[in-house]
Amino acid sequence: MPAKSASTSNVWTREERAAVAAAARERMAAASGSPEDARAQGLQDVRAAIAKMPADDRAMAERVHEIVSAAAPALVPKTYYGMPGYATEGKNGRSICFFKPKSKFRVRYSTLGFQADAKLDDGDMWPTEFAVIEITPEVEARITDLVRKAAG
Image 1 (cartoon, one colour):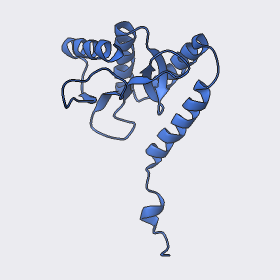
Image 2: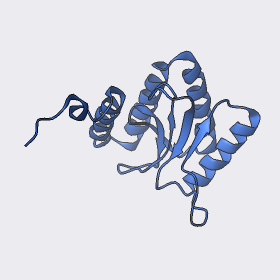
Image 3: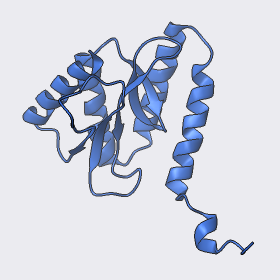
C-alpha cells in the first residue's frame, strides 16, 4: 500500500476540523437537560459564538440573531458546528437555520443557511443558503420572511 502523502493526510482544513469537533460537543450537550435548560444553554452558546467573531461578522450575527428571534420565537437558539443556529424545540429538535460568518472559512461573504427540515420547498428546486453582504431594511424583511416560512 502506498504511503500517504502530506496532502492527503490532512483532507480537512483546521477550520473544518474545528467545526466538526464543535458539532460533536453540541450533540453531547443536547442529549441532557430540560427544554428550558437547553434554551438557556443554547442562547449562552450562541452569544459566546457571536462574541468570538471579528467586529464586522459580530455586528451582522447579532442583527441576524435579533431578526430570527423576533421572526420565530419558538425556535431554540443553539450553535450549529460552532455557528449561531436555531432549531425546533425538544430533545431531538431539528436545526432549521444558521448564520455562517465569512471569517469562519475565510470567504468573501457571510451566509444565512437553512437545513432540510426548513419548510422552504418551492417546486423542484430552491436555495438553501443566502449570501449576506449587508443587512439593509430589504434584507431584514427577506430574512424575516424566510425564517417565518422555514419555521412553519
